[in-house]
Image (cartoon, rainbow, N blue to C red; front, side, top):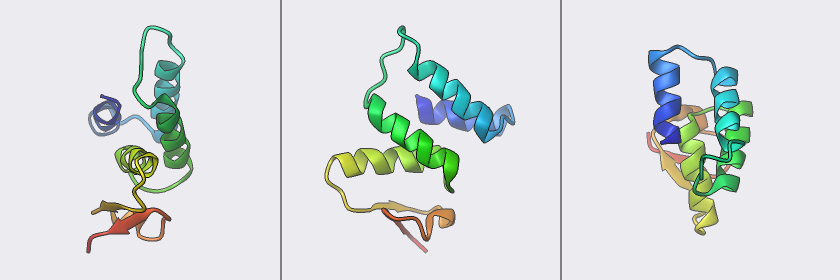
Length: 89
């Protein structure tokens, strides 16, 4: 749900990364929502905010690391030099 929300807000509504990050923080701090892997979402949000790549890549990467994976494979060339990612050329 969060990955789709980020995509829609950025692509369709042209929201900026800081705006979208603020919305996600609001969702995370709202008691009515129960977010799976809440702590991993927060780490992914921090990494996305300060780095390159898409939020979805960072979230998938954090979930993978939590499950014991060393790297996350991605097509996103922006993550070429980011630790924990292997880019498919």
